[in-house]
Image 1 (cartoon, rainbow, N blue to C red):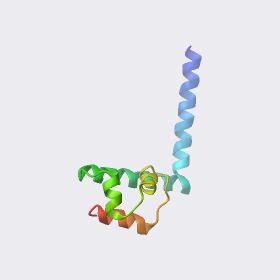
Image 2: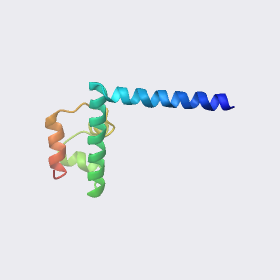
Image 3: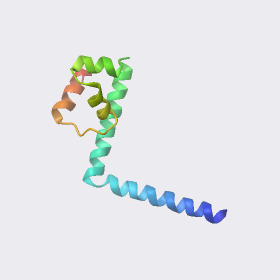
Image 4: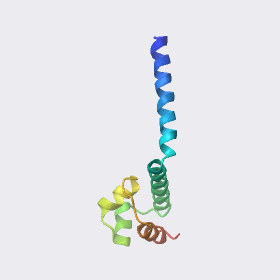
Amino acid sequence: MDKEIADMKRMAAKVRKQGREYEETDEGHDLVMRMEFAANVLKALRAKKMTNAEFCRQIGMKSPQFSRIIQGDENITITTMNRIARALGY
């Protein structure tokens, strides 16, 4: 049992190290930035007590695209980012 726990700890350390190394790549940095943007958008929507659907209607964006944005899956343009930020009052 002790060996299994030690193996699991080594694996966890390896995954954490790989995560830090990935974050230092351009792709990893981009992902982190998209996720931070998404978290900030969701926080602002909650503060405004606005649903995703309401916000999409307000800015004229389809829900599937907005969903990909807030999941960090959409590599959005500066124009789209600006459109979202301005609609949220930033």
